Image (cartoon, rainbow, N blue to C red; front, side, top):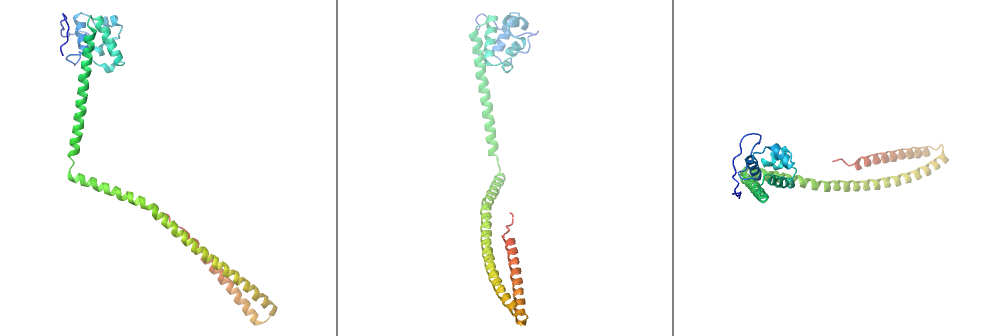
Amino acid sequence: MRVPTGRLRIVSPTGGDDGPSSPWPASPGRYIQEQRIRLGLTLEELATRTKIPRTSLEALEGDRHEELPGPVFVKGFLRCCARSLHLEVDVVLELLLEQERVERERVAKAEAAAVAEAERSGARVTPIEQALRLERSDDDIEIEDEVELEPENHEGRVAGAKRTLGLDARAGSWLLRVSAWLGELMRARLGAALQQLPNPRALMWFAFAMLLVVAVCSASVIAATGGIQHVAMPHS
């Protein structure tokens, strides 16, 4: 970009305490640096004129704007240096805008190149890799199906346990009724037997009643114990 400098002739910077020049061919930092050198000013002298720290002036002339507090300070420092070096402020700011535009284009091209490279990498997937990905997807689907069916199996086990519990409850109720009936029969037979003692027939009825009571009680205990064990559900 050609800069209208009027009668000003821009010369290349020379050695000394001027620091590294800007990598940009046409930039506000390089423009200010060359004008400062042409006028024979050092960074300390320019810092005294502008009240800007030397480190900030070095960053400004090197176009290292990221080392400055922010965009507002960059423009403010450029205006101040342009006035102190007898440069047109609009020309310096135009160089800054052009520099920012070029930087945006560079970043956009780099991002586009990265996206294109990623797309090319994705297109280079071999058929074997595609088959492996599909197989992994099928395995994931099967695992999800098993997880979904597990609650249903659990509910089925609970329902079966409830049905078994109901059957055991009915069996226990029947055993209780039989036990009560046998108890009444035993009391009746025992009363009659006591009245007929020492009749051998009464003793026989008494022994039979006692054996029957023991058998019924044993059956009740076995049934209750087996029912409790049958109701216990296995943990999954």
